[in-house]
Image (cartoon, rainbow, N blue to C red; front, side):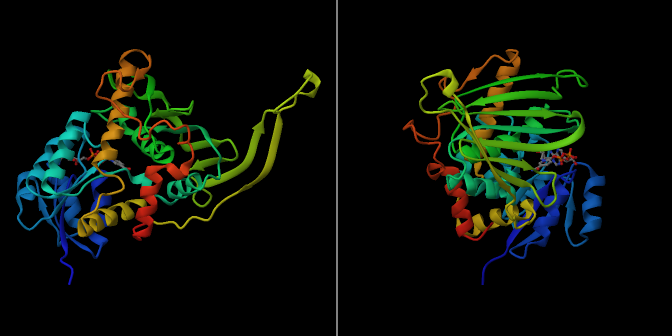
Length: 376
Ligand SMILES: NC(=O)c1ccc[n+]([C@@H]2O[C@H](COP(=O)([O-])OP(=O)(O)OC[C@H]3O[C@@H](n4cnc5c(N)ncnc54)[C@H](O)[C@@H]3O)[C@@H](O)[C@H]2O)c1
């Protein structure tokens, strides 16, 4: 019989209880303990699940001999020290996004996990969601043609964070989706923003990520918008997708539209752009809570000693993009070129001029592997 994995969760604030609920509901593991510095949050979690042990000292949870895996859902500035202690104690570790506050911290965590043979997973939740899985599948099949650009908007009023700006809070979702869909890393980034409410903490940012072969992505993030917007447009040479995460049923719409420049013309009168207006359609999505799939994936990776789809490596790539965005913010939006400092991103592909073809997309290939394993 398979040995049940015993889990502990650190952080019972806003997001922690969702993880607690999901790990509690998985038959493949046993949620033994939860921990928070704030006793009121521990009492809240234990009132929901009386059989779970409540702690306020993280050392007790990390040091517990019978706990195999630790989930970290605390503020970003605490991720590194908690994850390091967890890995050094020999526990498989699941960290909430964003993985840490610097790429150096991420590299250290990846290194410890590798040395100790432990699973290190970062919760890039959206990659486990049905719409993003479907988009990756469509792009991978080449149905959109060449991806020209992606535009993403994640806007609403609040929740203001005290230790990170809106780019570090909201944009990780967009960045993780964009890197996953495009399957490569940006070569440069620029980011502009302003802190209107809390001094020094930008509450609105606009960033542009530049990829090889003239592809780019724009991400608008704000805590100051009257309407909640969660929208992404993926523009391909043959088709386009609009992904509206706030829709309950019709989250993805695929538009069979494109504009083609005539290959040859002799006179201006002959010159016409060719506009193609085809159908639009809404693919059926098998809805399942993305966080539940992410939690199951973590447990399955422990059982099978395999690399998660969103491992420390993907966490690190995302942090590097955020570091580039922060550097650009400090330069009032001047572009930050990765690689210029010698230690930044290397594009995920070699430049053979064909990596817009999604078949070569390593991230989507990785997601297919997950599908085969039956996790998502
Ligand atoms: N994946 C997602 O979609 C998603 C959504 C929201 C939040 N998050 C992430 O989850 C993490 C937590 O965010 P939140 O909104 O729940 O924050 P929160 O402030 O609501 O909760 C954090 C909790 O951690 C506790 N805490 C702080 N330091 C601690 C320590 N050293 N040891 C034990 N407990 C400690 C606090 O008392 C608090 O209860 C962040 O990394 C955030 O980015 C992810």
